[in-house]
Image (cartoon, one colour):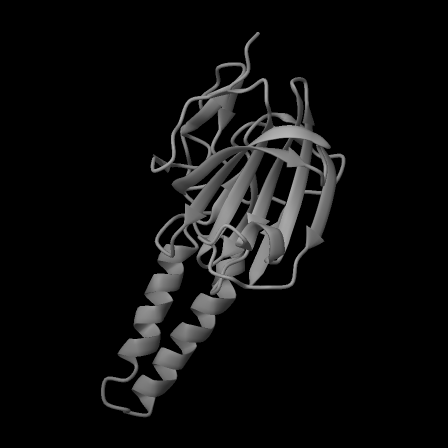
Length: 213
């Protein structure tokens, strides 16, 4: 299915219901209350925007899987898919960021999984361990890497458009997270990291790091 429409299709039910509510309130002449759902509909349209991106084509570049701000970069033991030491890059997405996630590096989707049960604020470090999360394991010619979509206190639904066996390209749309959240990227320790905590990144455009030839 094509996911390149300017508004992610998952947003249309929210937009449609809010617009209908605004029309109903206007017809019933409830003063200016109709402006509230209309304003929310406009925000939903903004939130579910799905812009095109200028994707770098140089071989070996690792792209950001999300828009947002880099919270942490750590070396950790990744035991869900990679089963090895890995570089963890944590990206926080505010309500005002684009929430469509993207593939960081070309390869084959080898593993998908969901886990977690809580909805802690996404900026909390423990959210990555306990919040409802979606794991996407990609096998590339540089080794395994993984993207984790993590819910937040407001975000309650993860959407992934991939399935095992899919061949994916760097910058390709991966899925989305509905409302404020966190995205984690796990890379082989051989990757050279080119960003630092505190930097703002754009999914599919910002270069997180690179693999040497």
